[in-house]
Figure 1 (cartoon, rainbow, N blue to C red):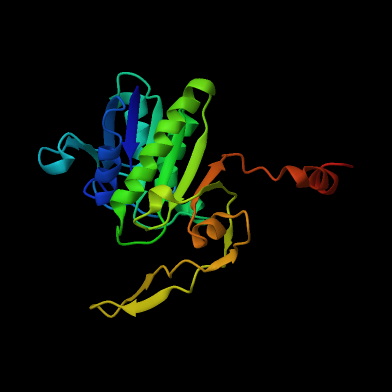
Figure 2: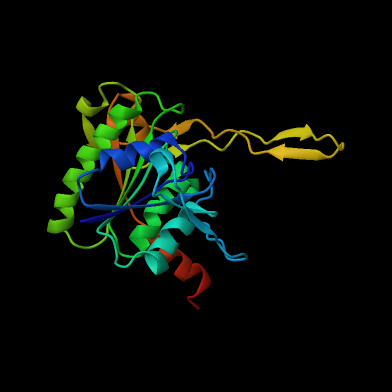
Length: 254
């Protein structure tokens, strides 16, 4: 078994080290992660400059390969030029904070897993529901058990699939119920924050994410709020299939 692990918080993030440690004994593990925090970069690939890569030489990151790019860059480089064979599974995380609902469109954590999925490799993105790394060891135990079960699924269902997992920051996370969920929806983001830099120029910070808008039973938001581990199967097809006849009639039919 060969597992590729990436993240979006950067190669020094505690969540990455915890996920790597949790997967020890499962087979060959390759870690390819961003040099710095790349949260919110979605599926961006770096196309207008070359990428550099180095191998961390010390600490618990020793042996991690590090790319000065995005999470998608890391997995893309690994799958198209770095690894000598395709991995059996791509993992991403454990992220510092939730990736639920609309977050998945912006998340570098989900994007890293999705890049593996796009290359035909089963993939899982792991996130903790709250920032701060509280009870990270418990989240890592959840991740290990899900990976164990997922590897069995790989043997039974050979084709690619993509899962998004959000884990409450609780010491008993490993014993919490797990539910299969759909994505909820957030309200629009808060307004940008305008400041003035030392040169007297206006600068803008992206505002906080909006609160949950669609968070009813069955959604990832609801599951986590009820103290459950949310597992959401994802797909890449953004086509609005239901509206195809409408648009055909409006724009194509004579």
